[in-house]
Each structure stands twice: as C-alpha cells, then as structure tokens.
Image (cartoon, rainbow, N blue to C red):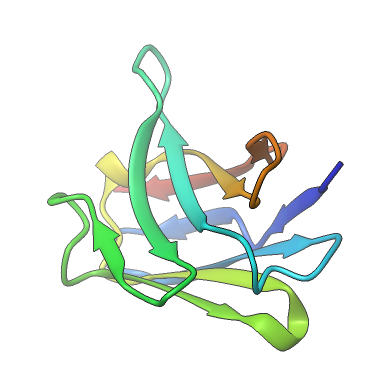
Length: 116
C-alpha cells in the first residue's frame, strides 16, 4: 500500500505564498495521476490541481494563474506552489495518488489557513 505524507501547510496572510509537498513511499513514475484536493469546513472535497503520468496538468478555475502543480520523480514527490493566497483558499489540502492497477490513495491532509 502506497503511503502519502503531506507537509508545508500553515498560516499565511492574504497575498502570501506556500508550497505544499506530498512525498510518496514508492516510485511515482508509473502512477497514472497525482493530485491535490481541498476541503473547507462545511464544503465538499474539491479538486485543486492534477498531474498525469505523461505530464499534462489541470487546475480548478478558482486557482488558475495562482497555483502550480509539479512533480519530482527522483524524489517521489508532488508539489503545489500556491501564490496570491486568498481567505477562500483556507482548507485542509489532501494529496491523492492513482497508482497503476492498484486502489487510489489519500494522504492525511495538511491545513492551510489564509488570514484576511
């Protein structure tokens, strides 16, 4: 079973930046997709950004131009660079992985709080 460990969350002021990291317990080269989701209090979990094994990325409209997803296969790590943060970005951010021929996996989540 793949394990995902997120880090990098915290408290930041509006307009600030954070970089989230998601370290996988095994090689991610063959993973079909990795992604970041978020869940704010009282809301459903939503997709923030995703990156496929071939490299194409996709972003939620609300974060386009502000967030960047990337991965380092050598470090088995996916990143989410977040800039121009807004209070509405406040949420628990979860890493997601879809390994080949195995069940999807979620990380434990990391809290991001943007103060106004």
